[in-house]
Length: 299
Image (tube, rainbow, N blue to C red):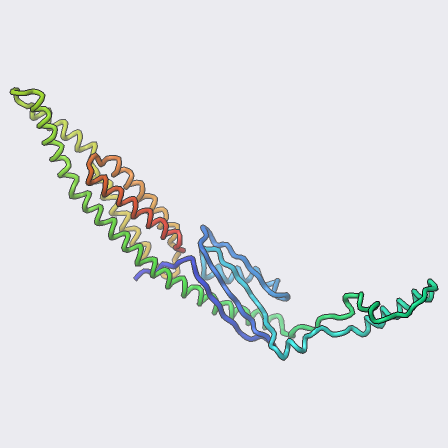
């Protein structure tokens, strides 16, 4: 059973702190490395670095957006409506009256004059909570959200693994096809050369030793056995990576193996000189490209 993870996922969890709901949402998409973006409510700015550190304990690759929100209860929210700062309003009234007297100005100090000062009304105090308790509550909720994210990435990883295994099976079928055709190709080429030479020399005897040397040269030039063996080794390494220990990031390793597979496929194609082998090498490259596209999603 494969243990790879996708880099795409979503996780969410919430908990209680004072008279509010603390919620953490995590969204992740593909990225070459681990790139973390964090948004927190007022009062939680100082823990942004800790959030990234906690995430790195569980996730190694992907662009992850962390959103922390604090939603006050309806009753608590009503209690936190803006309130008039009477002391500040009284101070403004006294100062305006003083300016009026000192400068000999006319007119009354009206409410509209005081409302021009934006700080006459102030927000009510937010829910009170101990800083250490807040961090502990955040860690608990955050861990639950990460559990949800990782669970989704693992589920997607299982689907990826099934598709990747299907691609590997298709690649192996093409390698068997190429391996079976390679010796037949030489026999066909020997017969073709023999017929051409016989046509050229007419009644003279064909130099079988010279023909054998030509066929041997072609056999060495067209030999794809080494490429097939190396390709099989790459397939085996790919499967070993798919079965790595849970939580192991293998995406970069798989990408490297795919590059090596592509190298062998190109070499086989360049040595083909045979329609069936050429078709098989094209099919190999198509499956390798599909592997590459899927591997880009693996953590």
